[in-house]
Image (cartoon, rainbow, N blue to C red; front, side, top):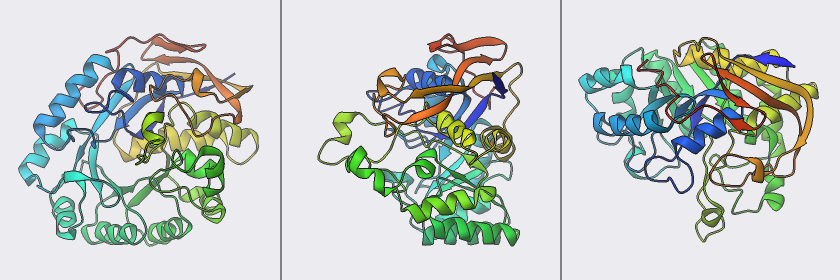
Length: 354
């Protein structure tokens, strides 16, 4: 057996409010615990989106009733920008500010660069900024971080050109960090025939083998592994307009542990990217008496039928993995053991309020 600290996923979509037919705070945090995560940071693109004091409070109330692991809530940067005073007032209650610069819908899509400038100028320095930016937009927002000399976290980097630009920017001293998802590390466009083109829709897209190889070759540039857990039902994925997104909370750690068993990663690299760096980047508290116990030799097959996420499927169906979570202790209480969730709804704490 080996022991890890309670892992942190800084990028999840738990679909409540507005999408509880595919996930909610109860099922999503059960999936987190089953996957070895004792803390998750939830994205704001719910229905309605979390983008002001009222919606942040409403989502926080739902989470407090149902969450079984600890959590934080992002505030979304919207097209109706909050004032500097409002941002300062909300900063202590939010895990960070999320800026959507590509591939989203509604009031959270920021196409006007003057809005980027507003948020970079007026968001309090102690409030982390995370952004969805791809390709040329990613390069542009890195320039914005340089101009305003403030840290920026880049979500789900997936392409060779992007990771090379990030490396160069870091070497120039620009204050950026980045995350990569397991599905971009372990899947490519060549997996689409197996997954299905509709079910394989995700943003950013699954890319080429060359893109995937570049991520592995630049693993030292990657600060965090984040699942971008984005569940949709099979009915939605198989429908005429399949929404992008994969579930990922329960498969991320087994995939990373398998890579460690194969010599592609070390346990220390997993800890740094799933615990140490997320804590530092997002100013997260330590969880006392919290640990994840792993059987590193356990070999098993990923099956959606054995997962806790409500969406009921996985793009990793049938994959053979090595390494299994056996027990989780969260703040002194056994929260998961041998396939059973023992933490009750409401046991999870909002890390910005406690």
